[in-house]
Length: 162
Image (cartoon, rainbow, N blue to C red; front, top):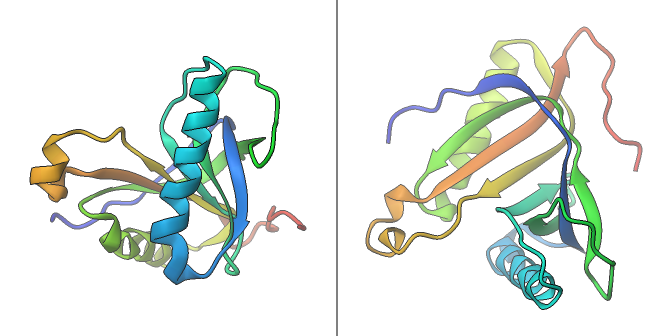
């Protein structure tokens, strides 16, 4: 795999349908796909078309919202709620390979921030590409985009006060 090249840019807020959880890191490989699957089922039952799967991480305790990009209005029901990726100034990097190796992409962004005098300013999130059958045979093709909301070190943090 080539080295990561984190990229600083601005992204708009993106609405998504989500389920909120607080989980242990060890439970992420089970909880994220479970929540995304439940949201997909909910949206399909409503006749609503979704986008990519999303995992939004609010903090180190792993308060997360996992679900599906969705710009169509829908009624919240049960565990499924309306949410949004906050947008703003971010550092992102695409990761190609198994989800179990995503830590390297996160570390690349944290290292970039330190080297370029940026600090974390809010949540991080992952956007998962739509599953392709070729990925079953070659997991190195799996694409996940990793994002961190950031600000310059000399600017006040805009982190949510939740």
